[in-house]
Length: 212
Image 1 (cartoon, rainbow, N blue to C red):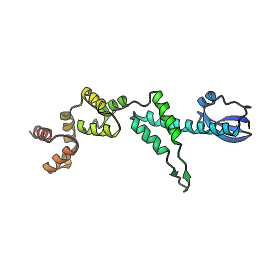
Image 2: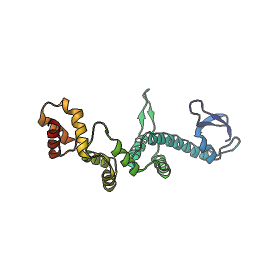
Image 3: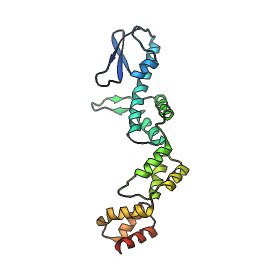
Image 4: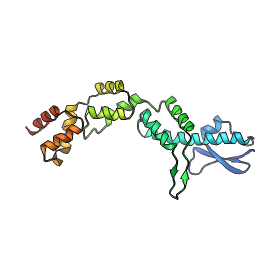
């Protein structure tokens, strides 16, 4: 079987269609064409073409995962969870079943992202601490719980929290200013603030200073 044409895709200028014996077989991104030495006139066995189809799936999934990572910093756990979801079969709008990617492709995609520096728990922790609800306010206890849920190690969390300019006193004041008008009952308001991770002593002091 022979590659008879390599044509650019209309919807995605970074991918090309590979024609084998004048019929569409699979698509690859531009870098893969060079890496895999695909060229017109080259002949392949069915097994080799099947392996190239796997590389096509890898390229598509890597592009999607890269876009996910570039949307904002993500923890390693978030990226693994994202890729795991892509291994699950999903139902299409027409009622059919779309097969998920193989776990092997998911593993390879994660390793490529990690190698190229797109997965970094330290950068993610710093981003999350400095950007999480900057206007509304959030307690360090809540930040710690959120980061732990996202797979960040305790020592990394503690280091970046200690380096951050954020303080529970300032964050609590932000939340009181933002939420006070919605809570007429002081006791319920204190309970709400406590659920956000602030201590009762800090809450009482903040409310006294606000009402003074």
